[in-house]
Length: 159
Image 1 (cartoon, rainbow, N blue to C red):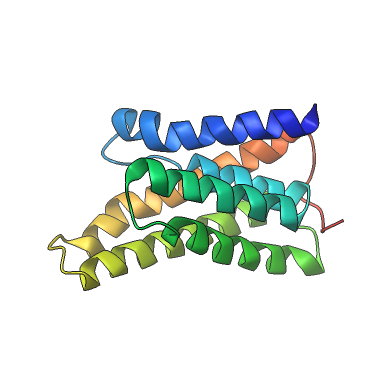
Image 2: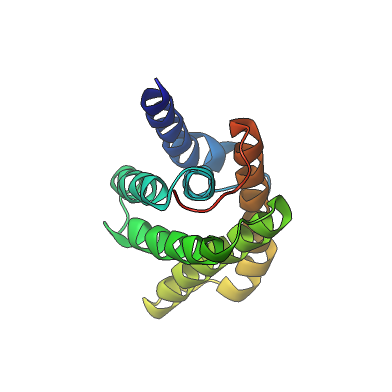
């Protein structure tokens, strides 16, 4: 039952990231639900579980949104490996988990914006990154802490 619930939550997060949140976001500010869910799984359950959900969910996002296939899961995997490395030595408290997830997701968004700028897309990515990327990253960190609290578990080391 636990596995089925996680799969359903993962699918809801992918659906939310691709279909719902882009249409209801305020000024383009919306949390990355899949990244937050995978980060919570990485912190609360195991590194492998979070990485599997990040890879498969990121691939689904790339396929649904018609973006470069493999870029989203690759960046999500790298960010979550960094999160798992931070969590390896000691359990991250909710405030530290919030900060770590927010910083890592902001880095993912900065890489996306840098790649788009290198490909010649003319937009003010620096300003856009600060005005929408930073609040979105903070919301993603908050959603991760919410997922951790909803699971009823504290962020613990890998088992």
